[in-house]
Image 1 (cartoon, rainbow, N blue to C red):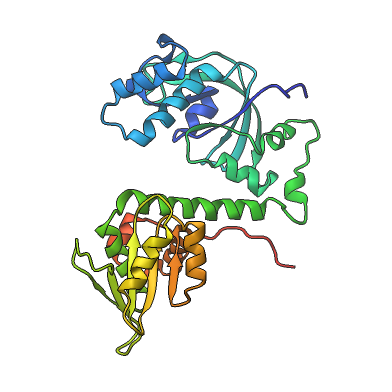
Image 2: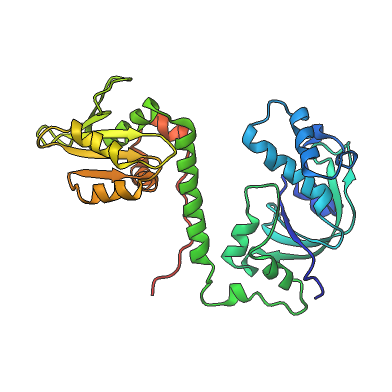
Length: 329
């Protein structure tokens, strides 16, 4: 097929019937108005988005304005679109047949383009990786990694090789992507919502979930110890220092914790970031102090999530799901 230069887009909707019965694709943001009246550049769209939605979340502004810009300006006639419908769980592949159209009376999907649907295929015709990519959390996005797989589905005599194959080689990558996305989400939420003493309180709660008894030092104290923890009624005592800074922890900071430790104490240093090379070397040579970085902290959160206080489970909302994994040989 002569489609090498055409882009393949993914799109989601809450109105499957509009897409399938009216042969259109669309995105919302009704209050944004007619995209065709704006200068065709990202900055113009971003500025207009801020003017239209002054209370919009800062982090979402660039993403939302970018989707509107790409839908109105970057998408071209002849591009392909992949739409996973919920009503029948089909993968619908079509070709864009019109420029951008503003339809003010179709609330909320006022930003539209006409499309000709070419194929409606079962989800089982595609690899797990392709399904994961088209399942993006965004409403409108460019398919990159598995665009060719969707284009191949348009060929005459297409046979779903991914579904017929004994082993779907994309399963492992898909599972890894889901796991890594979850870990990234947790770390971002911690970094955004827990600074200073708030992170100390969270680490104490995590230690409680792990079976330790903990005592928080008074806020603003300068003892070098943020939390004291015990596994049972007897020593050893574990003294904990917690840092929420974005920069890597230096050796001198860990030495300060060592200086606050009494004879027989064990030390625990917790950070959302990481350790400098010298700091890590110091930890390696000081077995009585363990350092936990952001990655290791997230692993502990996942392991003990169910035992965390409700306050923190609401702050980091996670849901137990089953994901596909490769069959072990």
